[in-house]
Structures are given as structure tokens and as C-alpha cells.
Image (cartoon, rainbow, N blue to C red):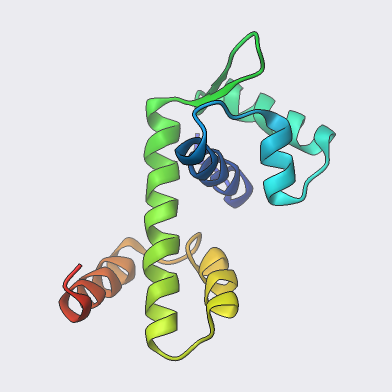
Length: 124
């Protein structure tokens, strides 16, 4: 089942939080995104049903292989797009906010071209 933008955002957030602390809870996700506990609970139930996360008996959230793949893709897109916008002179706050919106709609072809351009110009 294709995942919607909100699901992508949740997965990316879980990924970012898990890089800091391997134990991620729904409350951590809600705080990071500014969402209510019922909203996060509903989203976690849907992500679990679709096979993107597992939730342990202790409430710990873990990305499945497919969830991790989506999360890493969104994180990479966000990072590259933010860097590209800042290279163009956009301030960091605006670049980060705009990248968050663009990362969900940009085509693979356009993103790959931007990523290659960034790598050529920064050596990364």
C-alpha cells in the first residue's frame, strides 16, 4: 500500500529520533512533531497495520525494513534539499521548512539530478 505524506513524516521522525536514542516512544514522536497523543496513536496503529513499524509491549517503536527504507529516503531527500536551498542563499530555517514540503512531491529524476549536482559541487 502506498504511504501518504503524513506517514512518511512519521517514519522520518522515528528514524531521526532512533539515531539519538534506540528506544523511541509514541510520546517522543508526538513531541517532535507537535501532534497530540491520540493523533500519534492512530498513526502508529496504521503504520503498524501496513507493516512499517513494530510496537513492543513496552511501547518501543521500531522501524521494519520497509519502514526504514522509506525513512532513510525521506531523510536523505530532506538533507539534500535543505543543503541545495542553503547553497542558493536561503536561510537555514526557511530551507529546512521548504525541504520538508518538497521532499514528499519531488520526482526521483529531479531529486537524483539535484543530489548529483550537490555532490559535484561539495565533494560529498
